[in-house]
Image (cartoon, rainbow, N blue to C red; front, side):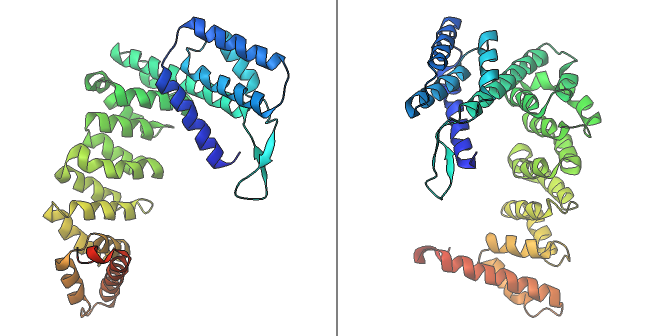
Amino acid sequence: MPVRFTIVLYLTLMQFASANGNQPSAKSEILLTQTQKLLAENKVTKQSEKQLEQNVLAFASQEPAQGSKQLLAELSLREPKILVPHEEGNVLVPFVDVGAAARYVLRYWERQEARQFALRASAAADTRFLDKYFSSDANRQSGFIDAVNDAPEQDLLLYRDELLEKISLYGADRLAAAMAKSLGDAGLHRQVIRNGSAPVALATLPVLQENLGVVAALPLLQLALSRDDIASAAVFEIAQLGGTLPQANDLLWQLIADPEHGSSAAAAIARYADRHAVNKLSSLLSSPDSLLRNRASLALRLIDRRASLLPSGDAGN
């Protein structure tokens, strides 16, 4: 299925769920009956397929019941019935995809059930919380993470140390990143940066300044420099800190001479450069170090390019 179509379908599902909330079971039964009747008519028209998809998506606003789950499980295997030309190419795509809609609703229910369990478990100081998380698939783990984002801080503290001990397990980095943000916990952030997967660690870096403050964020960004897969992003975050923290600015200018991080530092300096930075870069053009001269030249070229792309009134800013 085209990515664009998938995203639209997912957002539609979320709109149904957030706008309607959990409705009475009577409405769920009515929706189930209407959907079964529509299927029994065995029509395949654009109108009937669109109505069927809308009915399926509407189940997201209902509490999952056995009959609804069974119906959606069956529909999740359904292939698209009507194909239409894609607006951007000579290819046929589904007009609607009822099977995809059913799969999304089932996954949404699973995620919500996991979230509700996690909220209850953390509120009750249930020691099964982490075991249940680690025995869950990625979708249900996302429900736990939703709960961590919403739970009171005091409900999460019980699991902090045990999570650190299990940081190498599948999905631990995602949970640790969410818990670190909820608790404002530098130790958890450190473990995510040190041991987390690249996507999770990358997503953590922009959070540090707001979550911990500029002073506490800097050592963690320095730690991130030791990982090749996130080092460039860390350099840019250090550059952001440089506007308010002199130590970060000093570090950034040290990094421009670094064999590994110098190019990233040059780009970061160019991104946030003021007149003082331009003057300093210009002075480096006469450095005896050829690598440093090259980095300074790179930064100045990037600054010139950025200025050329700005409206004329902004070029001097």
